[in-house]
Amino acid sequence: MQVESFFEWLGQALGAIIRFVVDGLGWLFSGIANAGGNFVEGMSRTLGMDTSLISILALVVGLLLLYSAIRAFMRASIVMGVIWLLLGLWLLSWIIH
Image (cartoon, rainbow, N blue to C red):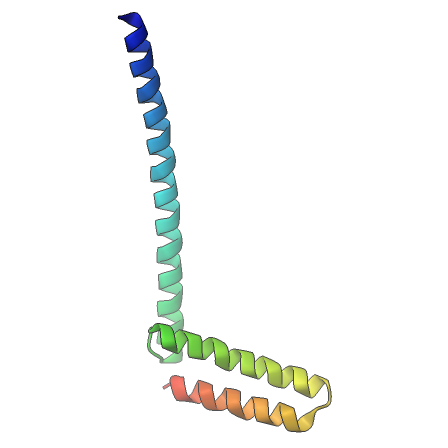
């Protein structure tokens, strides 16, 4: 009888620990998701663009094109720098209202 109550107590203790860990991780990931959503919402509202995934991807690609233009200018490749710059600005002006 006492052996059964010991294992019952052990099972309850282990279940409580697992429940605490799962609830804590749920709270942590929920907070990270809310922070990311608020960041994207604020950035898109400031830039005047949509919050869709395609708009965010286009923003990242446009910024990468501008970065490529800066790298091309630093390598003294004026023609490629101008091409990357125009492509990046064209893409960014397309998504930003």
